[in-house]
View: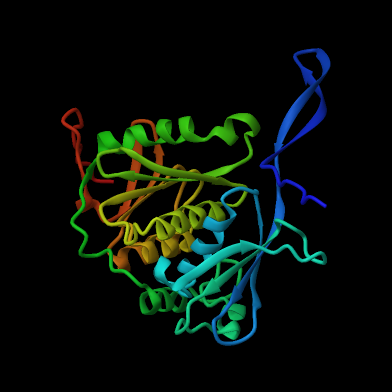
Length: 291
């Protein structure tokens, strides 16, 4: 029996009310399904590491990126294979197993605790940052990458153009990787902001591109502490968000030596940390105020 194909969008019929007119039409919705990520150590039994609600597509990138940003793996050489589970009792294509090479130590208890927590978990901000500084694989503070306000001004349009699923559904987050000169290297979309970044980091890991020195990571929503953590683990020196950062994200970026930019929409942006990496375009005039 053939396995069902998981699609990134679902076609539905909707009744549209628009300026006094009513009609039925087809509409595309973004697919949201669970993905269970399992780890199969070379020594010891296979176990479930996490379950996340995601948009199907780039599932292997997502699994690799999640394990990388959680500190389980640091390079593609630590992975033997990534595969879908095909056991009849499993949700086929909704379970991914990562087979690890001998010598890669992994703790099921540590993953269950999820020591990098989000703002809703109850872990204090200072403890979260100290955990990040202790477990960060790559240092971004010494990265001498420099970009400009002109480059940042063009990123949002490039991101939107690259979002093929968003243009059809309007319901997806995106994470895109750029060079400091604004060249698009890769983009990933997902219903979850953190999943989109994990997919991008997983792509970079499997392509043996880590660390992502001298790059810009742009995210379509706000910049949370969790996204700063993921960028830091991947070695990204500049994180740009379309919306606002949280206070803890800004504090972490300062401690890590990362450049954090928010509200990057067209010709406007705010630099919250690491302003030394953002130079002014020739057409920009700096105005000093007392406020």
